Image 1 (tube, rainbow, N blue to C red):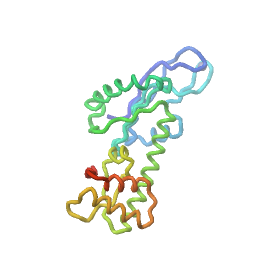
Image 2: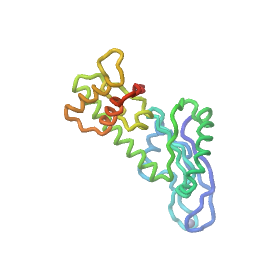
Image 3: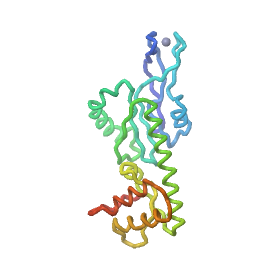
Amino acid sequence: MRSLQNEAAAQCPNGCEPFDVTYWSLVRADQNDDLKAAILGGELNLVRCPECGHYFHHDGEIIYLDAPAELLVFVFSPKDKQRAAELQQKISHDYEIIKNSLLKDAHLDYPPLCVFGLEELQNVLRHEENLVAESEVVAASSAAEGFEVARLKPSYARQHHFPFYIPAPTASAPAANDYAVAAARVLKSGLNSALLLQFKDAMSAPGAQLPILL
Ligand SMILES: [Zn+2]
């Protein structure tokens, strides 16, 4: 399913008559770079009141999906923030439906994030850019230390504050601690990465599970 637009009645914050708008309700960031740029630039779903000329964001619900990054975000109106607890049920319900219909092609096997308003979505995307940048440094440093680079399942890495890329242990059937040892060697080379440090600590903990690779 590609990006989708929806129609709704927009309400100007100056109390003017409601008017009809077309707004983006599903953003496939993996297919529409322009829409992702519009989110970061603050122009997505920006509308103009025909009565008073005021520009404002129509705050209809948006589903944001970047499938290769396994990043699914439900964006609600900032006005709904006080209803966050009660929305949890709606989110679980909607997620089950879209997983098997609207976004079936994306094979969703990871839970959605939930934010209120475009600004919070911008924060998620900027944070994501930082994670990608730090992960790329981890990959380069791992390669420089002679390691093969392995890729973690993105939603798993994000959830645990791990880098998207890690040094692969040389053992043929590595245990969790072998991942910790490989990470420790890359960190010892002088790499300053909180994400890799977090990964190393988690993998060296007693009873640590093997990481989920892509
Ligand atoms: Zn107005």
